[in-house]
Amino acid sequence: MKTNLKNFSLTTKIVLSLLTITTIFSACKKDWNNEPIEAAGIGYVHASPGTAALDFVLDNQKIGSFTYTNDRGYYAAYPGTRLVGVAKKDSLKYLTSGSAVLKSGSFYSVFVVDTLKSTKLLLVEDDLKAPDAEKAKVRFINLSPGSSALDLAVEGNATALFTSKAFKEYTPFTSIDPAESYNFQVKDAGSATVKATLPGVKIEKGKIYTIWAKGLSSTTDSTKFGLAVMTNK
Image 1: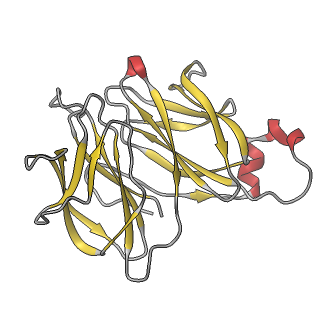
Image 2: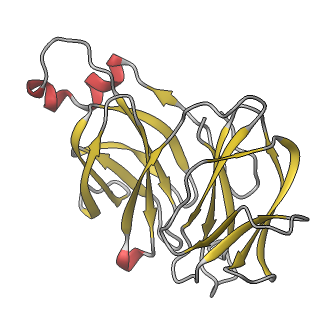
Image 3: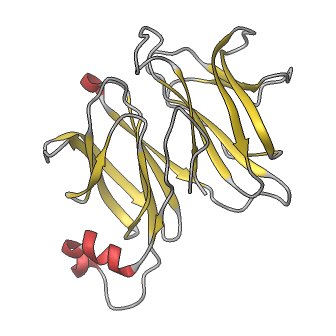
């Protein structure tokens, strides 16, 4: 599935086949009997400004390589406690790693956050239940290192959609009316001054989106502060 926007390119894949699970997790077969297993879905997003291409690793198996602001959709994973990590491209030397407890039938996003010297992982459970009839769902995550708490608003609306989210804080998915073109704005919490805009975002009925603050306020290159959007479902 495709993202809406110039700041972020996304093809959302939900790969939950037994073949994929067997390929990625063959070393874990001893943990399971022959009964059918409902997998978890896990996706990875590179949100670490100034960090080069990375390999995302699950249970010491390389899943794929990613550059800044890229993700590769959802992959199948056995439920249970899994080792999630990220390494420099073509290296299995972890920059950072941690345990993730994955529930059967649930979906998760792993965001690689902060800058290279202090890379961290943020694991977020994704509620992919369908929106209410005639609605879409949106959430907001602040992934801009060093930023103050942020509000996310829609241009022309007096009340912000989401308020006061500090770095690595995120909101639940919230219902929103579909529209051909939203201009999303991010502001310091409680401020009327727009720090960045994500224009022309199409929000479609029945779909689920994540909008996230990215980059650094101190730069003007490709790592500069801004907004990105991805389609979860």
